[in-house]
Amino acid sequence: MSEFTAITEEEFRRLCEFIYRRTGMVFTEAKRYYIERRLVERMSIAGSVSFASYFTRLRTDVDREIERLINAVTVNETYFYREDYQLRCMTNDLLADRLKHKARGETIRIWSVPCSTGEEPFSIAIWLLENWRLVDQYDIEIVGSDIDTTVMEKAHAGVFGKRALMRLTDDLVRRYFEPQGAEIWKIIEELRESVLFTPVNIVDPVETRQHGRFDIIFCRNVLIYFDDASRRVAAENLYENLMPGGFICLGHTESMSRISPLFSVRRFTDAIVYQKATGGPA
Amino acid sequence: MPLIRKSSTSPLPLLSGKDDVLRALFEGHAEERWAAARAAGGVAGGVKALGAALCLERDVRVREAILTSLTRMASPDAVEAVLPMMRAEIAAWRTGAIDALRAMQQAAWPYLPQLLADPDADVRLLACEIARTLPGEKATALLCGLIEGESEANVCASAIEVLAEVGTAEALPALERCAARFQGTRFLEFSIKVTGERIRSQTAGLA
Image (cartoon, rainbow over all chains, first blue to last red; front, side, top):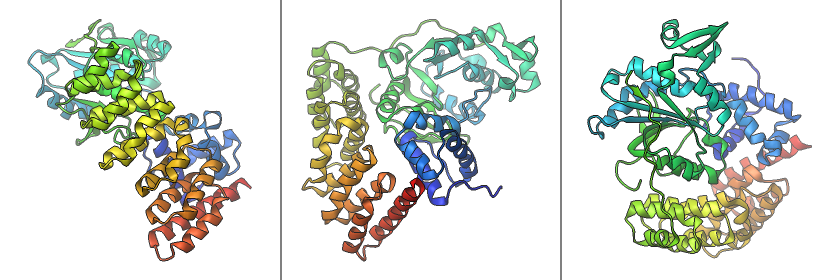
């Protein structure tokens, strides 16, 4: 570990408290070095000469500094098999749990929202095909949605660069992608056609309701950007979009417990996820 | 390949129509009340009905939907619909109310002085959280005004916890006087010490 220290222990605690209160993201001492590096970058760009002046800027959200800091401390880059422990949790535990509540032949529905340029919904598809032994016995519907129609056009095109594929083995790339030129691959047509892409604003209940109910929702690293009021609405919309007993997976630093009491926490071997009660209001 | 693509799905039902919404809010089963609570913000008379439902509703999830609808409106009427819940017997109801008021931010600020002067210590204690969303100088003035005359250590602790985030140097004399008044109350002395250090560090960093 470097001796690099940008802020005191007390300042680090203060920053983490603030981030948690505003976004629900949890950062412990183990992440201190990482957070400090991002903080120094932000302070430099913002022209803040001390933690105190930067914290004032952050608290008053000058020039959308909260969003800028969130962007700095979260990995905005999306790539295949990112946070694959949640995918493992899906095939090891979540699907088995869901099948207990489903009639034979009933479709399993999975929603990736926001889906950005498509890496997540296609990752879900590949992971299921590769790792779920019951994959041939059920119809599985995967929907990817985003508020940004530009990124969704890219998702639907299914064309990816080398960096997006960095976590996939050569064998997976060979079987699910077709080379399109120098370090460019296109997802095979059969897989591309298996994911439905739709526009959605998750704070708008009229739009979310159009998507029906899902068994599992992946909603990673988006609620952190909302204010408290919007976060509450989004959580309720997602709750409505889950089938009774359905699961929602958030980003690894996020906590639904702080946002809404609607969900119960489920701790599985590979991940902590949130579950809608099996009974009660939709 | 077992993965399928459907171009259409069954949208979830949407409750509409003022009469249907307001009737379902009070007379429906839990699922209908939940849907009505979510829809009531968009119908005439919705705020008043939501406020009345909030006083009666026992289902946690329906209560949450009522509070979220009121939070979205963030109007004086919506704030006034939530305020009675700060005196609720059930702690979770009080917590739900304060979360909603804090999320309403500017709409709730005008009510803060009267809440901080409320005869009920629990109301004063909870109200401190609303100050967290105020600009630092205003929050400092209001919270210092509270701790200068506050007799309940827990209320002071709540105010001081907020000052630790938002307080300005103007809070330091009030914090010292508070420490003197509550000498021997260990948790409060510690809280004041930490808050004082944070404010001094913040002030020095800005100098």
